[in-house]
Image 1 (cartoon, one colour):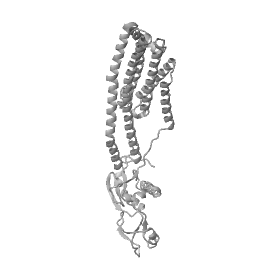
Image 2 (cartoon, rainbow, N blue to C red):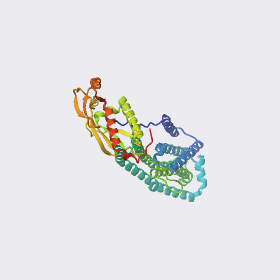
Image 3 (cartoon, rainbow, N blue to C red):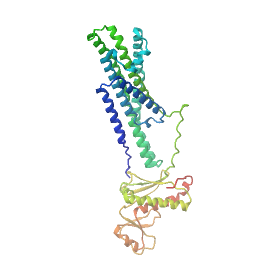
Image 4 (tube, rainbow, N blue to C red):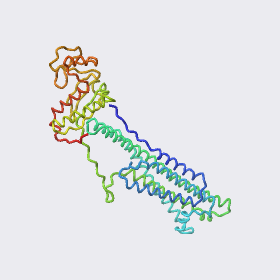
Length: 433
């Protein structure tokens, strides 16, 4: 039977949230916001990054927070545009710049040339640490995780197919597990892109900081007649503090990306290992159909097939007083076109050839007159039988034949096999449908 895939769709409201976020952060670039509003934006950006860090630390699986790559991208753009806006205000206002967050950082640092040197060394040290330790390591880890996840995807999918064919898992479980694998692969691929974006953001921060220092120095010397020393002492600390704010957000985002891509099962004292769900009982009875018999399990005939299997299973449970596992129907392209095969506990228990559009007329010993048709021996008791067309069914019943459609032949064959091997199902207990 053809598999039905489950297509996951992102809610429309999530798309509007992302689009709205992109539009909002883009406005920061084109609209000259006042410093007070930029301070509020930076605080909101910091709060959002902190909330994301808390969520990432507390999730059990890396891809439980599927919107993380998109959130990191939006927050990165937002932070970058805030830094650009701060730099624009520093260039235009100069010493009258009144950004409270940046001014607060200036107050906490030393004054004079000593403070400028110390602040410059701190900025350079933080930059080197961010580039060569945090961001580069995070980018490498994300790239390796994405590559390993993608490379292992075909093998994991084949393992799921093997479990499905062997009857260990149901079709629904196989589809769900494949979807989980695909989501995991997409997530790590997106995180790899987000990590590279953060790495580029760090380089942009350094470029904006350097450009702000150079631009304000040129303005102070050429247009205001200030000395290089006074210009550097007045405006360089502002640009460095602006760079500090951007580097701080970049470090937090890099840590978030590094945590989420290296996250496995948390087993330290702060977190408990998730309790695995008990495995579902194995499906030990399987009917495989050749290509020509697939219509028997589709549309209207498929409903009749499943209902007859369920009814027969319940009857056998009552008659034999044993628990019989659920019965699965799968297609097998390796079988002959009109051939079916019955498996019990993974081993073949019987097979036969059908004519899907004909009826099997079984001679139970009371037939006086034979019908014309293809003579065979039915699979249950080996009695003589004849395949006839649908228009001969009434005549066959009148002559004393026991007439069975192809689905009834399969179910009767399965019923006989289960009765013969009833002792093998004593140990299994399944939940009734």
